Length: 137
Length: 305
Image (cartoon, rainbow over the protein chains, first blue to last red):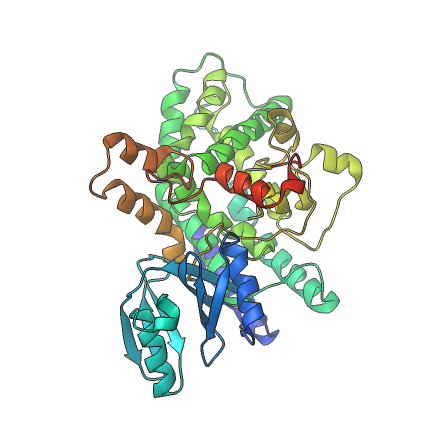
C-alpha cells in the first residue's frame, strides 16, 4: 500500500479510536476507596508479602503499603494498577497539589501523589524519608 | 525467480484491523461483556502498532538482505506453486512457534517481545501492541532452514505476514470458545488468552501462531481454566509507548554494566531466561511457578505448574 494512503489512514484511525474510546467513558481511572482494595491489588503483584498498614492519597490514585518485605508504592494505571517495593529513604519533591516520588525505574521514573493538605504532604514525606516510626519499625 | 514479489499483507490488513477494533468496542459497549477497553492503554497499543509498521519500513531491509544472502546457498528451488506456499506456511508456523518460545525464554529476545505483553487488557488493540526492536534480536536466523530448503525469501515473508494477520482476531475476550475440533487444532482466543496471562500456571505456555498442535507436541500447551490476569509479572508503570518499547533493553544495559559481577553473570543477564539474577533477587517463570505451588499445594500437577 502506498505510504501516502497508509500514513493518513493510520493517523485518522488512531485519532478516531481515541476519541471514540474517550466518548464512551473509557478514560475513567480506578479509585482506591479502602485499604482492602489496595491490599487486594497489591497482592496481585506481590502475593508473598503480608500487608501491615495502608496509606491512601487524597485522590485515591496512589497508596503506600507497609509490608513484611518493606515499603511499597502502588498507583492507578487506568482501570488497573502498577506497584513497586521501594527502598527508604527515597527522594521526593513538593508539587502544587502533592508530592512526586523519584523511582529508579525506566517505566515509572516519577510518581505524582495527590495530597491536598500540608499535613498530608508532611506525613507522606516523613514516611518516605524513613522518619515515621510507625512505618519504619 | 529472484525478483519474485508478494503483496505486503500486513499493510493491506490495516483498514480491516481498524474496522474490527471499532466493531469489538461497539460489541463490548452494547453487551457490557466480552472484554474491556481503556483509552490510554488502547492508544499505547495502536501507537506501538504504528511504530512497528514504521520500523518495519525503515529496518525491513535487514531481514530482507539477510534472507536473500542465505537464499544464494539454497539446496533446492521449490518454486511458487500453491502446494509449496501451503507447505511453506506450515513450516513457517513451526518456525514461529520456536521464535516465539525463544522470545519468552531468552531475555535478549524477550526485551523485544515483552512490549506485546505489557498491556493489562486483552482486546484487539493488544494484537497491535508490537515491538519496534524485532530486528535487533537476531531471531531471523530461525528462518534459515526454510530458505536453504528452497522457499523463496519473498514467500517466507508473505506467509509470515499471513501468520500475523491470523493472530489478530485471537486477541479478544468477546469470543469464549470455538468449536471443539477447531480448538483442538488451531490457535484460538481461549488458547491465546492463556498465553497473555500472568497467572503462575499460564506463564510460558501456548506459544502457537496459527496451529496449537506445536504446543501439544512440545509440551507447552495449557488449557484455559482459572480467570486470566493479563499483563506482566511486574507491570509497567507507564502508558508512554517509547518507554514501553525500550524498557527491557534499558534493563539489560543496566544489569550487564553493574559493577562487581563476573563476565558469566553479565552474559546471563542478557541471555538467560527473563527474571534471572546473579543474587537470586528476582524470579524466573520456573521459580514463580514453584513458589505458587508452595503457597497452593492443591494446585500441584495442574497443567502449567
